[in-house]
Image 1 (cartoon, rainbow, N blue to C red):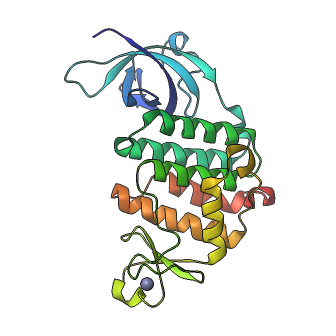
Image 2 (image 1 turned 90 degrees about the vertical axis):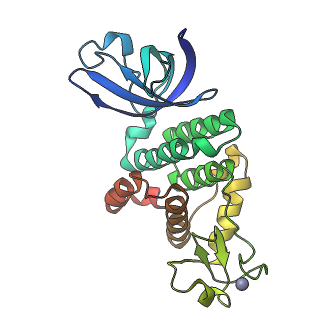
Length: 259
Ligand SMILES: [Zn+2]
C-alpha cells in the first residue's frame, strides 16, 4: 500500500521491542492509527521531537494489509503545545481528553470534528489558565460527539424536568430525580446540584473564546468530574487509565488551578 500523509495528534508513545516505539495517534481522516516507529529509540533524526504525547504533527505512515500495526515512516512537528507541561494539571487533564478521544473514536460519525475538538482542547490547555473549564467543556463535547450526550435536565425515568438536587446514573446515561431513585435499586449514583448542571450545559454551548470565562467552583468541579468519570467507565466498559494520574496530582495543584 502507498504511504499516507496526514496531520495527527500523538496520543501515546511507548517502547516497543529493543529499539522501536509504538505510537498511537489520531488523524482527522482515518481516525485512530497504531504504528511502529522502527529504531526510533536509536536514531531520533527521522522522528525528531514528534513522538511526544499530545503534540500536533504531520506523519507519513504505511498501512499493512491484514496487520493491526502500521509502519511510521517519518514525522514532522507542527505544534508541541509546550504549555501543557508548565504544571501537572494541564498535563493530567490533556491525558484524560486524549484517552477519551481514542476510546470513543469508533462511535463518532464526524472524525474531523472529534479531531478538531481534541486539538482545540490541547491548544487551550497549553495556553492556560483555567484548566477546569477547558477540560470539562471539551470532555462533554467529546462525549456528545460520540452520541452519548447525557440527559442533564429531565429525569431518565419519569421524564419530568428537574430544578433541584438530583442523581446522575451512569447506567441511565443521565439524571434521576429523588422520587425515582429507589427504582435504581442500589446502583451507584452521583449527586448533582442544579448549579453543577447549569455549568456543564453552559460549558457545552459556549463558543471557544468565552468558555474559559466559566468558573467551576469546587463542588461543581467535583460533581461533574465524578459523573463523567463514572459515565465514561460505563460506556467504555472499564475505567480510563488517566483518571488515576489526575487523582494522584490533585493535592499538589495550586489554587489558581482549582477553579
Ligand atoms: Zn423521576
